[in-house]
Length: 361
Image: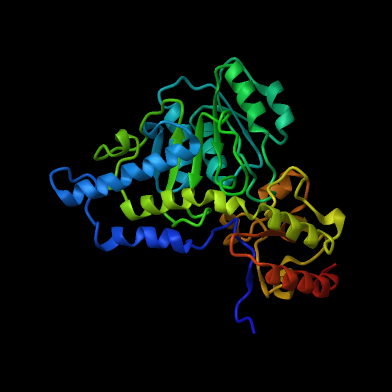
C-alpha cells in the first residue's frame, strides 16, 4: 500500500541521485578544507576538487574552464549573467518573453525601473521585428518550465549574432531533458543543480561573453561571484552533469508515458505543444475548481505552475500569457516525470485519472 503520493513534480526539483550523494560525502568530512586556503594540503585538495568539477562542467558545454562560474543556483546565475553583462553599458533596449520564469522577469522589471526599455514577446516569431539599434541583450529560456516547450535557440543565436547582440538563456529545464546543439549555444547560459539530481544551493553560469561583477568580496570565481566556495555542492553538480547521458536515456520512456496520459486527458485541455521535452505535460481543466482538483487528485504530487507561484496561490503568468483566465490557469496541472518514475507508477496515474477526471470535468 502506497503511503505517499506519486511524485509528478520533477520540474520543480529532483532527489539527489545516489551517485551524486556518494561523490559529495567525503567533502563534508574528510576533504573539508577551504578552497581558498592556498598554504596547506587541506586547501589544495579542496581547490583541486573545484577545478576538476569546473573542467567537467566545461567539458559538457564544450567551453573553456574559465568560462564556468559557480553560483548558488539558476536565480543567481540569471542575475549575474544579465546584470553582469549590462553593467556599465548605456541604458538602451532589452528583449525577453512574457513566458519566462520569474527569476528572469523580475530582473527585467528591476532594469525597467532603472531606465532600460524592455520588450516582452509572446512568440519567438516576433523577435526579428522588435530588434532596435540600441538592443543590448535578449533573454529567452531554452525550455519553458511550465509548458515544456523548446526554444529554437539556434535561430535566436543567429539573429542575435547578426546584430552583435548578447543572447542569454535560462537552461535550467533543458539539461538532462534534451540533447543540446553544442555548436550553437547562447552566449550566457544559466542553470541549476537541483533540477538534474544534484543538490540544492548550487548552479552555474556559462560566460561566452565578458561580464562584470555585481557583488563584491574575497575575489573568488575570478571576482565574479565572491564567497567561500561550497566544495561538496560543486562536486555534486559536476557528478550530476556526468550523469546527463543516463538521464537522457529515459527520454523514450517519458515520451511513451506522456502519450499514454494524453489518451485519458481531453485533447482540448492540453497546453504542452508538440515541440516540447518528453517529460512535461501541462493541461487545463476548464471550469474546474482548482482546490477541489488537488483534493480529488491527492494521490498525485503535482503542481499547477511554477513552484515560485505555489505559496502565493497566484495563477500562472505563463498560462495567462497564452490566453487562459485566472480561474482556468489555476485549474491547470503540470505533470513532470523524472528519472525515478517507473512504469508501475504510470499505470497507477492512468488509473487515477480515468477514475477521477470525470468528477472534475
